[in-house]
Image (cartoon, rainbow, N blue to C red):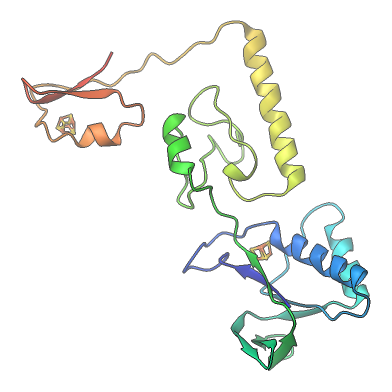
Length: 227
Ligand code: SF4
Ligand code: SF4
């Protein structure tokens, strides 16, 4: 049995869809049936997201091979007499299912890497509410960031499949080559200032500044921007 959307599309964990697990789950079904002829495979899903070139055809192929798709989120998995029992509703057949399985495979959510905060600070990158790096504009500039010369591609920006990651990487590489071939780069001259008359010395800004550009003048008890 293969359970889709574990930790994804769930307000208790991650609201986003992890994009790749429908397809790798179906690929796993296909491989199981290829290597163990006659094996029964059940896929528990909420809805299938087979969006991509050839994906729908692959879904039909897996269906034809005999994989059973059950639309429902399992409510329980437990061990009984050496087997695993998966209990789930079946919202299409309008009934409860109780499937005996040798193995239960969870299609778990893709998450930002554990060092995402460290890398974000290193390159002064913003992160979206789901924790992934934030692009400059999701439609008009999806690989650039607010920091000129820093690009985000692949799953550090959001869950995505290999073809999309490769396309993003190619786009970023061509943008970088264009910057290099320009010879010179203009940087923004905008810098923040602190009005010493108004600064209360609370140091809140020091912790928030992503560039570590604020120091504290102990004598005057005010913060300063390092220029
Ligand atoms: S890709 Fe499929 S299995 Fe993965 S989170 Fe999205 S709907 Fe669920
Ligand atoms: S320490 Fe920073 S945050 Fe606090 S008052 Fe001064 S400038 Fe503002």
